[in-house]
Length: 157
Picture 1 (cartoon, rainbow, N blue to C red):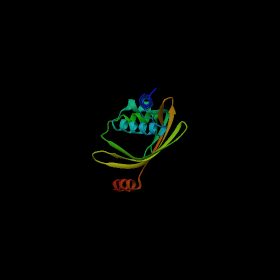
Picture 2: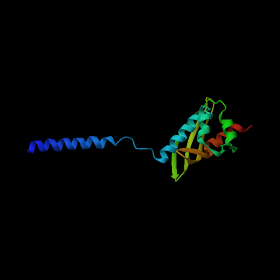
Picture 3: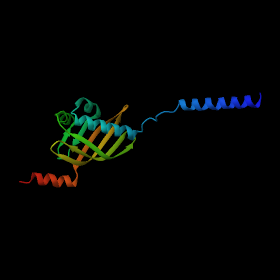
Picture 4: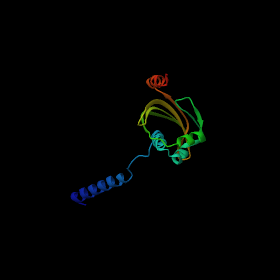
């Protein structure tokens, strides 16, 4: 084999190797933390549009919800409340997702805005892995300190 033929053969072989190596590439599968963050965002959007069917699939069977007003609702009662029509936008920030096995804890803050009001709060959520999907098992929200003062002033006679 001549040196030219050998170079062409090596070039062709190298090119084929690069092409074949590229076939296995593509987007990496999401991490568990990314899966949970996606579920949180889907849940927020579903709540804002009162989409009970989507929320129903995202909640664990024994879900407990403690809101910023101190109310504690079980799954059925919270879904009933979530189904009420609302005109809100919800924007989450500084989400932190910590996954340990089949359990994830999410902390963050959000703003819930209506045409008339705006509420800022911090929250903690617990998500559990069931089969191939994540379900929210618990939620706790608390108004931010400034929001508490605003609520107290608004409630004063």
